[in-house]
Image (cartoon, rainbow, N blue to C red; front, side, top):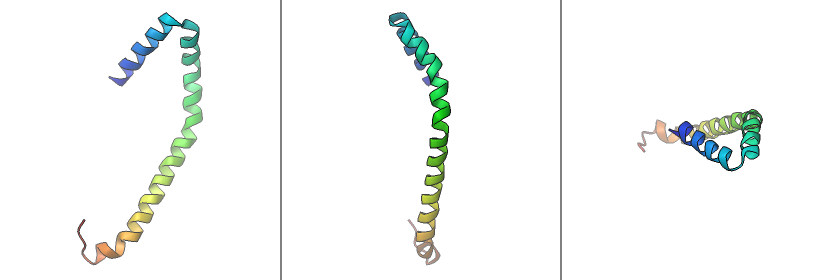
Length: 67
């Protein structure tokens, strides 16, 4: 559904301002490639924070605390 909505928005943009639509079509893959390292960094940071949370709550879990 999201893909269809994106395509329809792009079609409207193509009808209203075709140079901008073509520029968006060309720049989208480049921006996506540039964003990959930031996504990987976000996954690593989220995993590190989850590990730290699990490590800090480990004594309470060992003593039988139920969330």
